[in-house]
Length: 74
Image (spheres, rainbow, N blue to C red):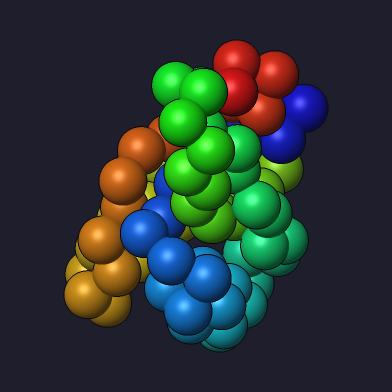
């Protein structure tokens, strides 16, 4: 099961993926549909493990993390 880190934009997701790769954390950019039905989408990263570490690394590198969840909860 993948963990999901929600980010503010596709650009942030791409940058975050590169930062995590430098720390040997594999991730995949994912489009996240809005749960409120208004059609808004955001982007995030799917990662298999090391969620807390990944969030910490991203925040330390100036990436704003909008949320975290297990993929099946989205």
